[in-house]
Length: 280
Length: 334
Ligand SMILES: Nc1ncnc2c1ncn2[C@@H]1O[C@H](COP(=O)(O)OP(=O)(O)OP(=O)(O)O)[C@@H](O)[C@H]1O
Ligand SMILES: [Mg+2]
Image (cartoon, rainbow over all chains, first blue to last red; front, side):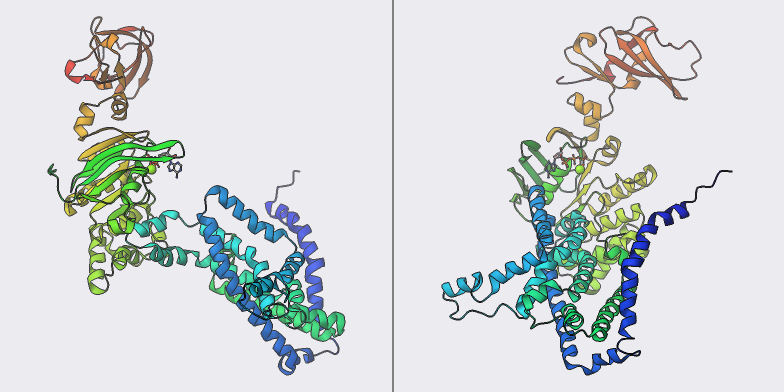
């Protein structure tokens, strides 16, 4: 007897290896972290109480949220401009600009952080220039603070914002803007009334992507913040590797995870997530 | 009715050229369009129809030449200042706005608001028969309905002129015929100047006051539909007007190439004016279509009504063909 071809089964067999890998390397450790956060040092919600009690954790969470929100806003504004220029560039220049964006994506975050270090520190290039031009007498404090962290994060996130924004803008029929002009809108009117509203799904998608990424950013804030402006990822690492406080560390990791899942859940109620990330 | 006096709103295009790299998309095009006229730009794909229309609308800057409207130079005027209504190929409705807001858009851009504007929107939608679709979004409408919204949006602000780029090309034959007559009705009702782009010969013939035939960026002939149909200037225009047969001077016996429609050729009783032999015979029910070739290899196409009983020529038969002089169109060149 010939076995009947079962598309369902084939489908599951094809995704099975990936599912297994996810289960072993992802779901298992994540559930361990969740488990640890309510069992170490003793079973209960003691760790989570620190969210209300611990002054330093509170401050760190606010810092994380603030930096993430500001860097998301800055990234979106800069990324929007770049994506707009790429969308409207001629083919040759478009390729060049794309390479530039991707190149910055391919250069290690580490290298990029050190590059900013060279530019921003008190005897760095920018301060030398400002003092040389007589704009300021004393070097501006641009390193080891929130400013340098923001600069680093925005720089690292830009390609992440540009790509979905670009793909959104690319799919807008250029005739729509032309039609708006033909119907009496000037350049500005055509942009704000037609082009911009049509890019909003892309803006929304890029914001979510960048914001979630920024929340968990580690290397850049750690290097450019110099331990003074600590964000949650670095704080967790300090708790676990330096203070050896697995309870607080795993609790904060869980908080981050839950916060992201809840954010995504709310967003997905508002808009179609698959469309947002370009699937549909 | 067409008037040929130089009116205030006459559009004049003088020596317009546009090149892309080395490619000439428009080559010294000169054309005048009268107030209230329905002018059609007709030509094959890539002949420069859209480029010419976009230059008139102000979306394309020509390299040379001048466009004037009522004597005023508008060559470098931005599109939003020209007040031409435009219907793009594919309609270009704003997908994030309702039908009402789409039609309201040009009014809003002109600072018109409130009850007055709302009334004009309602009137425009009524004119195209979509009064009940105002609160829908474009994606909820059929192709023909979208097309009519685009039309309403283009006329609501009472533009000087309506520019339409193959507005019906995406529709099926039936809807197309229906919208063709709606467009003509609209043209009569509002008395606007229409510049209409199509590559459909029969559409051009049935709708236009005048037709401008384009080829490779140049105007081949401009004239009334019956001018073009009965007196094509050259072989290209004749072919575009559906003429199948071209007899070179040595076969026609005259000085010019003769253009002959398939129905103008008839089977001769004897030798006829041209001798040929049948190479193809296709049965179409009501008629039989023949292709014959002369000795020198010139193809000739003609038809015979079916059911005539007596013996019809078969493939390979030697025949003679005749025509009436009044049906022959002498061509000026090639
Ligand atoms: N931006 C451009 N860059 C280079 N070539 C162009 C550009 N726009 C148009 N062309 C060329 O100019 C020629 C005329 O184009 P146009 O769009 O005016 O043709 P059309 O008559 O409207 O054809 P269709 O019936 O296919 O719409 C074409 O050969 C086209 O390839
Ligand atoms: Mg075209």
